[in-house]
Length: 394
Image 1 (tube, one colour):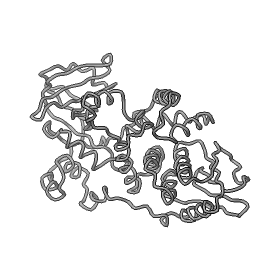
Image 2 (tube, one colour):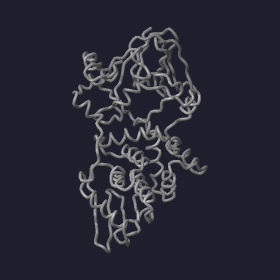
Image 3 (cartoon, helix red, strand yellow):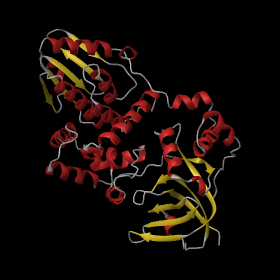
Image 4 (cartoon, helix red, strand yellow):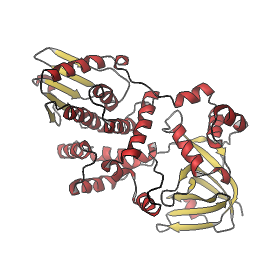
């Protein structure tokens, strides 16, 4: 294996200075983060309407129209970010008990009468009779902007989750504002366990693990998982711009706790779409790790500190050198490989699926080296690595 291994020399110092665990300290050292940059990663970003041109104006006109008991018409393009932005708006209007109507798409919304909230390439408000034409200028995703505006009227926790997911499906850079939203959404998803998200985000293996462990399993909501299980299938589902599909998704995500057999079938159909497994890890460098450092609390802390990763700060790769295999098993017609190692704190698992390394002849007692990302095994709940590459030494 030919990787650029980072020379880690300041782990102990960083651990003491920043009060972090070993894995986090190694990543800080490898990425060359200053103390200021590290703390900035975890700062909460406060959203202010005044930071975005036109947002305050749209908020004020919505309030004025609401106070006058005027009806709102929401029109949107059939894109995933627009879908979630639409739901955020209509959920807020519904909670406000405002009168509203939803249209799938109308390219001539400038000709429509009354208060039109248009969600296209930008978020707009039109009222031809009053000669009002407002538009928000922002570098945030549309769903984030919808959340920022509508939270002035209703603080809907589900809207945060929707805005966070939609952030991931756009090309909008993950700024501090978006990272804050993501972290809050993750907490909400774990706390509320919304039915619609559970169908996507928690795999059958994870459900089994939760049952086996009395609900004490650890669920991650990192970017690659959200893209593969939720975002990419939904985008494929909407590719044909089919009105029925748009309306089905609108209904599906409007009520986060609705249980309906038809919607269950819709969820099943969506999750069967083939998605691309994007490489979100950083192949330019690897960080050495020991078996004793691969523990559940260490991995959780790593995830909580640095998620969500993004283009400028991708998921780090770790290398586990010269470790002795305790056990190995193949699964799913040899597409999958699981290797076990025994440590002072219990078992550590390394897994690979649809990866050429699954063809290596590995058995108990072999000495191997592994490059991969740190993870918590979805089925067993044990700490380990998701294998990117592997080498056998004997």
